[in-house]
Length: 472
Image 1 (cartoon, rainbow, N blue to C red):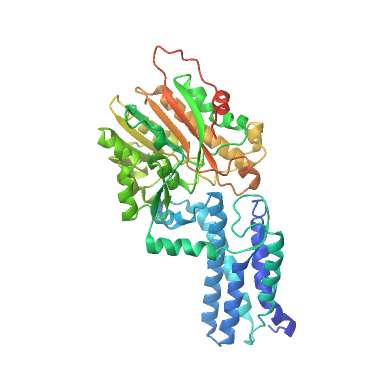
Image 2: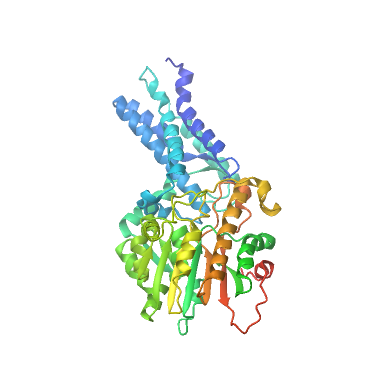
């Protein structure tokens, strides 16, 4: 293949523009308003240098491929991290539980990333080895940066407002992982309201149930908030008084558990020795020292987020994961219509609530059914307030189903817990901007169910009553 002089001048810019055009197409509709990712200039720059130095073709090909993959991965991590109010530092720990990950989603995505990185190496098919001209690419980057200083908002834009003509991910991601490798994980006191601060240390209720509800988002509109919790309120039938409010959140799922159970903000890997030692001050540990039996349950495997090590460090005497639940109950199988090969929330609720027997006990459940991605649902199968988006509809149905199952399990229990704390771990990180805007980007809801005395009037609370009492 022969290229004209003009063609050689256009090679670097062509690679850069091609990768960014694919990026814009993939992120269309997600609300990501950055149009050029500067990191995609690295592969053509490396390729130019390799050809200049007459490096072996295999070296040029592998280096270009790896840099392309690095740029794509850092870009993806940063985009996803903004959905969690900055959660990329948890990624290495997330991957430690590789056996429990939703590979049916990850494999096709990884294949697309690898294919995109491989396409960048196509210029290596040139028969002529003469290096192409590089200067047009830096010139373009300088022009884009100059324009962005006038119309852009921030390179680290967090939210949906404003645009950025050009951005970069590697300088944002690399310090997080380098700092984590040197200093390890850490905890910082979370100076905001959480379940940890809500429990009376001097006189805690005898039987406490904690439910960390996966991706339970704080709907911005009261009617949506009411619709999501209505199945729970209906099934409870006035058994509990309901209080509702909102907590600030940062990070992904395990950070949400640490926030509520420990009153701390987690940075990095919770399974590191330094962090595990600090977890000894969490609520389960404090209650256990007061004579409570403490148990944690999660429908996925214990390797996921290293919960096999984190839960005991928090003070849980016993932890049950998928293999434990399946061994004890043949009815526990992989839950259909969900992303993970894990137990359904309904089975986990049944096991957890069945532990209460009138003795001092603290039981914690981390749910899974509503973990994104969720299967799309026909908008017509949802109420009109969730029907504008198929992903939003599918999410609402799973969350409502999980809460209905929790309410039914509580209502039918031989011994009900005295207090039930239900809280979101993080907002639902929808790819669709339309669905994501339905929920707050800074806060998640909580519900506190306090058991009524037998002689109290069991006038049922309504979902609208609870939703109207949200405290921001």
